Length: 287
Image (cartoon, rainbow, N blue to C red):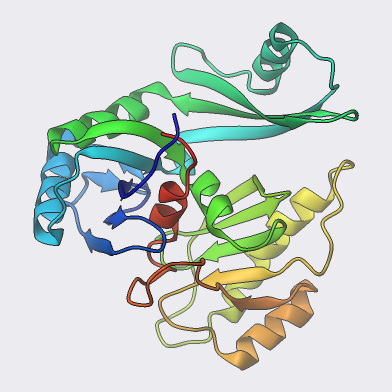
């Protein structure tokens, strides 16, 4: 159903919880907070009660009273595929292809797919296999905080919605571990996480080269893609990347490397790199 007005986004994709309540072009409240040690590890909810309690406290501290929540889950708890299929393929045939592409234990994983559009040449399908136990833990933690979870969506999908380019790479340096999402045709195509191996205060550029090359090479090897060298690499970080570092990375990776621009109609006081996932959630057209 269409969603209008303010909405609440909850980011449970890392060791910190982030929340944002509001609407594009309007007032936004946001905040972040930690969780008890070992309760939320790399986006996986280990202790439902502890995470729920920490989320409840964060909502109270931020002054958020909305209870209907859109929730972002880490890509670590799922796997996804973007499939280009014949345009006349039936839904039952799509079911069979998705089952073959995501051949995972059905007792542990729940598989769903949605149409992204079709034309005379192809039918584009986005398929996701979720870890059932993790999705249950995520929604149970939200309920323990007094929320009614309306949607659970992968972080990569949220980020793809929030960036200004149809084809780009996003490097989330705010997250720990850091994450890379490659977006093409406005759809997430690849996700990768990595630890930043650079001492505090050192130039982080060299630490980004190998992970980015891995993602770019993986995607460009596909026969059905044309990821142009003009597609930018956006760096989402609390502190801006030094111009010299960005220039060196651009030369090594053969893609322009720039700071992530703020989405339109987001108040200046909202740190868009920190709350990018939440912003992508409230940009959803439906609940």
